[in-house]
Amino acid sequence: MFLTHLAIGSILFMLGAALGSFLNVVISRSLAKESWIWGRSHCDECKKKISWYDNIPLLSYLILRAKCRHCDKPIALTHPVVEFLVGSLFVWWYISISFIFTLTQHPFVILQPLFWLTVGMVLVAIFVYDMLYSQILVLPVAFLMILTVIYRFALVGFGIMQIHDLVLAGLGMILSVSFIWGIRKTAWLIYKKEAMGDGDVILMAPLAMLMGWPSVLVGLYLSFVLGGVVGMVLILGKKKHLKSTIPFGPFLILGTFISLVWGDNLINWYLSLL
Image (cartoon, rainbow, N blue to C red; front, side):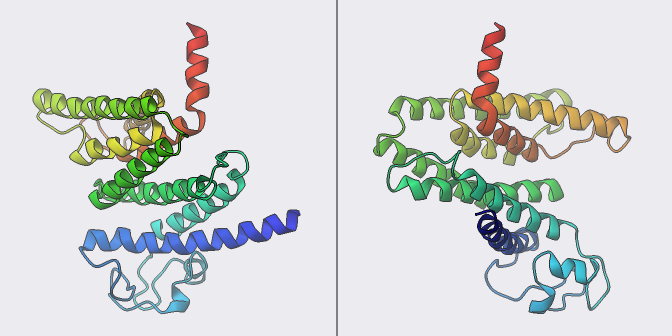
């Protein structure tokens, strides 16, 4: 049994790494305003086309020693990182099927795991792109919003989610998006600089719908805590100064992840202290 799970996990990791390689294409070509679909992969420096044997997820990076075969320029570390993250996401997804994805009603016994796997991949792309370029891609955010709304309505339609929970999730989305927008505008009025970008505002919408109410409060709070802690560490380490800005999208995503996994427990723990 263990060997069977190990084999399945290994296959899923390789599949995830391959999809992670595609996400790298999406990330790099989005920055370069190139098509995600047409054209062969090429080196960002010398523009030479990359052969299939130099494009094997993770393995090629190690064999080439993190350098382009043609120009010897370094290959960005983000390539193996994204491949590893998505590969690990697939393994986590497989492990979690039995105790997290608990819906047994058809078709959600299949749709629930697929939905969250897709959400995970989209969030990885948004996370990495914002971390690298301090910009949130609108298209993946729009796709995530549409996907989440359809999924939530489907849950209501099949009687798995109550309509009032959907309404509360919508209200939570409006409140959280308004909160982020208010902070952005207030910072501009007081300091004449943007504390957050438009991308952070729009990203909050699908994240709030994913978390629902009141978990969105936990996710939002943790996002600011994590951002503040990392910001202080960077300032103390002299990597940033007080007037520097750091991408906030990754912290929104991390806060969302923690809220989705442990949100109910954190809320119950907090209420027990009152």
